[in-house]
Length: 292
Image (cartoon, rainbow, N blue to C red; front, top):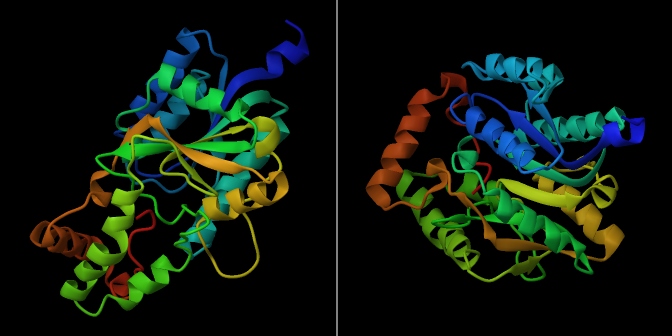
């Protein structure tokens, strides 16, 4: 086999993993299904400080040549979560570039509970084919029963860049907190749940596809206030290409249960459980969910 052939891949998957042992088998099954369908696939996964069997499963998968496990211990030293995620994503991007692999498509994804029901191979291929359209630089998944990831979303009418700060201000009491979700989060999630394609400047929602030649132009890092790393990345690509993204109604994931819309009592109970699970010193400063 020639070197050029050995380095070619149809898809390169980039994922960060922490405490997601229950869904890693689903991710590995997706990779295996693609390979059995005739696709050549590479996968780079960064793991940092899991307390379950995540690392063990990933090490086993690397031994079986299913993935490349990327060391990301440096993430633990960054206290700010959005910045930490940006550093991790950037490391995966650098690892792909250093590997010399020439992929046609790059798939950036989460492999926690959002991948509990992975997309089908036909849905993934159909979504990737939309990247051949003029002016489209990225295609993201939607989810059911509703779209959830507001922090990564932006179009000419809506941006949620300050949503976490606004959310923190609403934490006066559980009633005000719930009213914020009802008025500022749930309506937008419903509006972005559609059976038609949605054109936007930025989206992620658990899984996003790029052409590899476009993906390498971006960066997850920027100076200044911390915002969602996907928003940073997609703004850069939009500026460089003059293009747009689209949310593909055919590329469907399941809305993670911790981001499901709830009536007041289940909402309050979930927040109480999360509060009890937090270390004592963090209970007053936690900003809330990152993907909303």
